[in-house]
Length: 227
Ligand code: CA
Image (cartoon, rainbow, N blue to C red; front, side, top):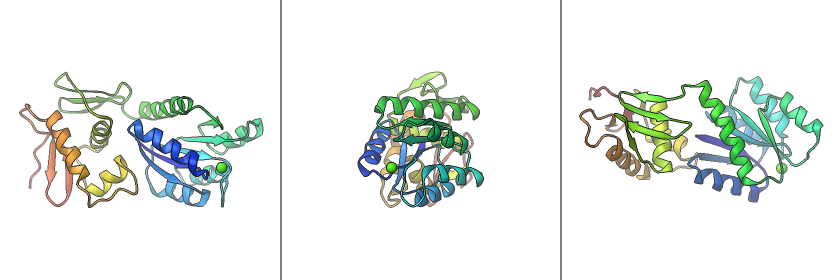
């Protein structure tokens, strides 16, 4: 999943980013309200963690503005003040949940999981292509009913490819969604992960699902692409 963290305290932002990355998420960080609101509008995130007290524009205004512009991504507000008024203002502005700082990282993770689950419930519960299946809630991946063990990054990559099955995805798109916005499209890390993933999902099966589109990127499809 792709998550935006808008938090001006660098130490807190980096702590959150590191923890979420370890869970296999792609995480962008923004340090002020103007920049955060801009990123929330131009990129397609699965979740936004939004601090209330931010330079340039506070989190409540950011939330209200992105909702007014049609961004429906779940928003989890981070607030240092445990005042009822703040919480109500946040929820009124369109936030889905809030967390009072300081918080235990485990609690943040639980809230993140709940919001992501709610989001994947409203999408399709199980992602499927031919006999390949991925359950976003249990994170179980199977092909022809046989479980496939993936690393967190391989899993994130496969989930992104499945959500965009039958579309050619460029390295830049994959990098932005599965890694983060600072991903270097010139690096060969995607090719390495694709090759690992291909070994796990295609090797030993008659129909190959993961295709390399020379000069364009990658395609997950049950049909052989016409090259
Ligand atoms: Ca702050």
